[in-house]
Length: 433
Image (cartoon, rainbow, N blue to C red; front, side):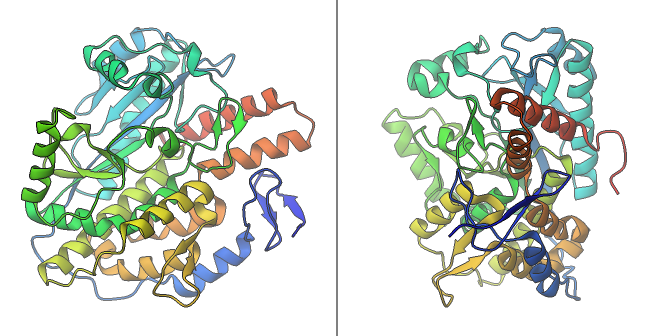
C-alpha cells in the first residue's frame, strides 16, 4: 500500500497509517496517533512503594566518535592532547581511549539518583566536548558514523586491542560502533542474577528508545540500530539465557574458561550481564543516545524496572520467563523499526502490541518505583521519544528531507553529522527544561 508523506519544517516526517518507507519498507504510524494513545493510558498512579533495602546505584559508559569539523569524517588520528586534557579535567569520572583512535569513552562516577546521574553525564560530555574543541575535533554521540569507512581507521595501540584483533580479525577491523552501557548496583549476587534474567523481556523496548545507528558506510541500512548487527558478529553476544543464581553463572564462565574460550566474564558480550569488575548488572544493548536527556530517560526506566523486579523477587512473584526465541524476535524488531515497532506478545489477542501501548502499560506498572526513585518525569519522557523519534529517526528524516530539497547524498550525510554534533552538545551547559 502506498501512502502520502509530509515532512515538518523540523525534518520530522508524518505519514498516513499503513504507508511504507520507499527504502526500508517500514510500517509507519502518524505521530498524533502515538501521542494520543499514550496520553490516554500512560498515566502515573498513586501509591509510592517506600520499602527499605531497595537502593540502586548507577553509572554510565558512553562511547563517542571524534570528528573532523571541516570534513565531518572521523579523525583517524586525533590529537593526543585531547586525551591528556580529558585526563587532567576528568574529576571523579574516568575517560579513556577506545578500540579505534577516533573514539573516546566516558565513565561517570557512581551516582545515587537520576538527578545526580544527569549531572554526571552533563559533566562527562562537557569535559570531552571542551577538550576536543580545543584540539581540532568535534564529538559525535551516535552508534555509527553516517559515512566513514572502516578501512581508513586505525586502532589504539594497546595489547588488549591487538589480542582482540588477532582473535576476531575483520570483525574487529570493521568494529566502528559505539554504545551506551548502564551499570546498576543493587541487592546481593543471587538477586542480581534473578533480576537480570527478569529484565530480558524489557531489553527490546529499552533498545528501541536508544537507536542511533541507521547509516553504515554512506548507506541507509534499513535498521534503526545497525550497531547490533556489528556487535552480533562476535561470539557470546546477544541475549543471555535465563539464569537463576550467581553459582549458575559462575559455572558457565568456568566452562568457557576450561575450554579456553575466555579469560573471564568480561568476554561475554551479552546484551545484559553481571559486571566482571563491579557488583553491578550492566545493560549493554543500547545505542549511545545522541541527546543527553534520552540517555537519562533510559537510565530512569532501567532503575525503575530494577526496583520493581527487586520487590517482586522478594515476594517470590517474578513472572515466568518468556521463551528466549520470542525475546530475540522482539530484539530484532526493535533493532529494525525502533520506536515504530510492534512487539510480539503471545498472551495477547493478535499476538503483538504497539510500542506506544507497551510504553503506557510499562509506565503505569513502574510508577510507584519511579516515584520512590524521584524520576517520574524522566520515565514519562519515554513517551516523547516515541512521539518525536529517537536519534536514528532524526537522522533519517533529515537525510530524506535534504535529498528532497536537492542535496546530493554526500552533502545530505554531512548535514546529518552536523545535526548529530549539535544534539550531542545539547544540555551540557544549561539545566534542562
